[in-house]
Structure formats: structure tokens, C-alpha cells
Image 1 (cartoon, rainbow over the protein chains, first blue to last red):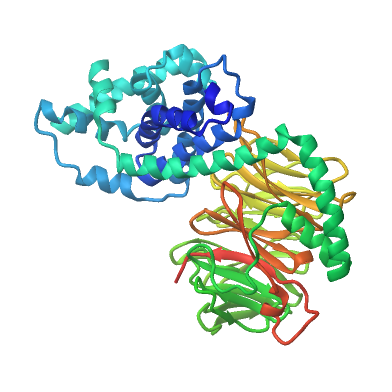
Image 2: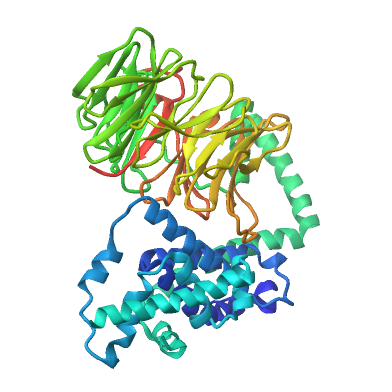
Length: 168
Length: 397
């Protein structure tokens, strides 16, 4: 971060290469649309570049970036559902092969994940992909900690229920 | 449900074209960084820059005084100041897929992506149907639905009073058109019947539909904005009185947006006051358009400096702020007008009468493509026609 702030393109690239995979993955897991996830993560980095000169180096870069990515991903998903764009999500879910055994647990989990609301997906992604504590998630999403905990609990319950239903 | 299973699944799921996405993103981020670096260099060397700029301006002023009329010199200097690429002499292509509706003195034109244009007829105002299948236009006391390919009239209806501001909404075959006839707001089905008066004593402001619905916003002369379900004939929302309402719109999330002389206010359902953007007390908010969630582009006119700044602001109407600084994407003399966003959401079109240009901004980074000689292009054969208005950007046929 220090090098990027001083104008080093190679340091900025190192910062980008370090943070991009998880930022893009997080966006994708919330929006379930590759192009939108790419746009969201890309715009978050561009926003970061624009704000480099004001960024407080004492604070970690990751949470700042993830806050933008996840909030934008939530907004994008809400906007899409409000516009009633029926697209890849339903088709993908419908065409996904049925899970047959423990090796398909990942696919089952993902299918179940995309049945959650964007708000619930976001807390799951922040907790289990990006490894934030419930307190940190509460801060990132500006939610009460109790809300985060209840969303996590409800999300896990729903995932379990959906997976059981898929198997039956 | 084991947390470890979820953790493993989230980390292992293949995501689409991960490497390609990273490379494309890095190109954009590096370009943004390079442009930032140029700005930073000027900040670090401000004294040198000022001295150089002063010398350049003096030289330029002398040269300009010798070579060009004074008004043109102002325009040219500001164009250089904003770092815009040279303008195209004609609208030979659109920067994004879709069709642009341009309303000129001669009537509405449909501009295709390849730059070809068709004049639909002698009408005063026009707008697209929701998917661009038709154009609705007004002329005197008539409302007409037109084929955008050739201007053929599908249907028309006449009113006792002048018809203004037709706006079309809805999905599939179940569509509605709202328009003003005098001070009465009417709504008619997309096939031309039946027609009903919805409200009296409305302000001279175009009504706005919530996308894909039959929910309509309109302004009364007393300054209140009403949101109604026209099918159920039921009021859903009403704002307090506002002065100087210029434009009504809905955000992509379906929230009401009201533009007044100095503010863009976004209303969440059930909220009486709204939240939004306010320009300086001495300035005017010329236009604003809400993009994807949390982003708004607005034109801030400073009468003292006689110039307009177009700003991309983040976090508009959000409850969770991510604290991104607003981005100035353009600054030019006099006023800009009639914002419209491309169907893919990546380009913003605006009219710049002072320079006789249409401007196309790549979002969100603000790269500008400009097209000159717009008045002559849409009022051929005249040299002093009125500057045309951008009436909307619809998907391709």
C-alpha cells in the first residue's frame, strides 16, 4: 500500500494480484453472474485507486475493499430482482446436475447458497469465504451484531434444509 | 450444517474465467492508476505547473485572438482543459449498442448504432416504448404511436388541449402511456384505448413510470409529487410540497427520484423527506440520472463561472455508505442537458448546446467521445436551428 501510494505501479499490481481473487470470488458468490461480479470487483479497485491518496495506511486494505464489493454486490442483486430479470440464476439452478454423493457436496452447497436472499448470502460469504468475525461483519455492513448472528444461523439452517431436500 | 463444509465449498467453487477477469480488470485499474499519477504529478509540482500554464495561456490567448473568434476560443480552451479527445465531425456511430432517439426542430429521429438516422415525422416530443418496439410522439393536440423503423403511425388520438410529455411503461402487451393534455394527466393503454384522466392541475413536468410497472409519478402544481398505481387508481406515496420541480424519475431499484432547482432527492417508500444531493446555494442542478444502485450522475451549473460540472457520485440513497469521493467527469462552459444512459449501462449521453455537441461518457471512468455539428445534423439545411434534445436510448431492434 505504501508503495502504491508513492506511485509505484508494480506495488499497486502486487496489491491487486493479492486481493483480486477473493474480491472477485466474493462478488460472484453474492451475485451469481460472472460479468456483474467482474464489474463490481473492478469498480471497487478503481475506487480504491481514486482514493489512494486519502487512504489511512494504519487501516487494513482488505476490509475496506470487501466492504465496497459486498455492498455493491447486494445492491446489484436487489436491483436485478426488482427489475424482474429472470436469467442465468434460475436456468443454472435448474440445469445443475443432481447431487449423488459426498463428492457433490460443494455443488449442493452452491445451489442452496443461491436460494438465499442477497443479504444472507453476503453474511455467509463474509464469514466463511473472507473469514470475518460476526462483529467485523456487523461493522462492514453497518448492521447490529445480533442481526448478523441471526442471519448466519438462519442461512446455515436454510442451507442444511435445501441440501436435504435436494438429496431427497 | 458444518461450517467447514460451507467454508470449503465457497473456497473451491470454480468461478467463471477467473484469469481473464483478472487481466481485464488489471488493465482498467492500471489505466486508472496512470491517469491518477498524472494528476498527482501536477499536485506535487503545482508551482511549476502554474507557471507553465500561465505561460501557455498567454501564448494560447495571443494565438487564439489571432486565429479564432473569441467565443470559440473559450470553448476550445475548456475542451483542452478537460482533456477530451477530438470530437467527431458527425454522429457516424453510437459508442454502445442500441438506438438513440433525438428530438429536433424537424421532429424525432432514430439513430442506429451504425450512425444511420431516420426522421419519424413532424412531431414535437417523443419517447421510447419500454423495449423500443415503438415510439410515442405528440404533435399539437395529437398523441401518436409510431414504428421506429419507418415512422408509420400505429394509432393516434386527439385531445381538446395541447398534448405534452408522453411516457410509456409496462411489460409485454400490457403497457400504458401517460401524457399531459393541458393541465390534466391522462393514461392510455399501449394499444390506444381506453384513455382515462388520472389527475387534474398537474405541473408542467413529464410524468415518470416505475420500470415494468403501472406505477406512475407526477407532480401537482402545488408542488407535491404523487405516486399512484394507475390500474388500482390508488395513491401509494405523496411527498411534501417542493418548489421548482424539474424532473421525476425512478431509480433502478424502483425508488422515486425528484429533481428540483438545487436538489436530487431519493424517496424510499413511506419516507416523507427523502435523501439526496444538494448543489451550492448559488448553483443550479441541471439534470441528474440514477445509475446502478448507489450511483448518480448530475450536472451542477455555476452561474458565476458560467460553467457546468458533471459529477459521478456514489452512495446516493444508500443507508450504508462506502465513502467514495465524488468523481468529476466533465467541466465545460454554459449548460449541458438531457442525460440518457445506454441500454448496457456503460455510456452516458448528454447534450452540450454551447459547443453544438453531443457528449458520450464512458462510465464510470468518464472517458469522453464528442460529436460536433449536432444542430445541422438533425435539422439539415438550416444553420440556426434549435439544439436537439436526446429523448432516450433503447435496445437494438
